[in-house]
View 1 (cartoon, rainbow, N blue to C red):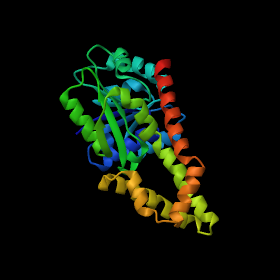
View 2 (tube, helix red, strand yellow):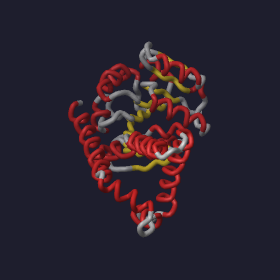
View 3 (cartoon, rainbow, N blue to C red):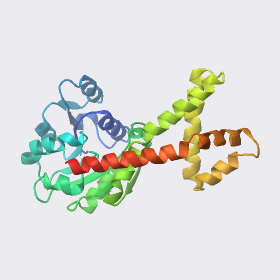
View 4 (cartoon, helix red, strand yellow):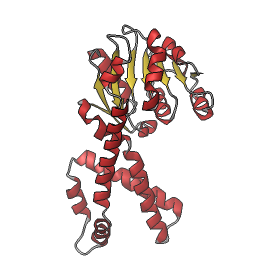
Length: 271
């Protein structure tokens, strides 16, 4: 049975831990997580999994073989400096979800020969619908890659990618759920404006987004064709689409991805 440690116990760490538990890849007592003492919600969440919570990062490294670095980029160096004396390449595999931190940066902060994987999951991992990607480090083995893919696949999909794609991927799938939540909220607000009860509007809006995404994945049709299939001449869908185009929705979403990607690149340069 795996022994997994989390540096950082926030929403992403909680989502991954819950997914790993649901998939039966680890037992609660074999998870150790570290966080600041004042982060009571994080403490309560991991204690609810039956896991050990500590305020000492070295203790996490001592008690786990697979280590997930789930902290803000600005504190990555501090955490890795703390665990460096306890980190051994023969035992430990580090998976980093820290935005913008490259494989080379991670390896330079750890002892020579350290095995690392740069990964980017997203919060729908909490309900085993995550979209994750990973980049193997220079010393990572085939078995490390298989284990990483197994862990990430247990909470959704997992793909190996080239590292130059990580910033736009972070902007798309990492930040993307937030964009979709805004769209769901806007769809529901529009329906409420037209007289629909709020709870019904959220149910129908969320199911509509889920169904549309599933259609794209399962049919492998171009989204434009699927859009055309719904749009009758002079119909209500055509009227609604015209309003969206007039409001600049398409450009706004493209611009959001560009801005988020630029932010990821800025973070990497600042480290």
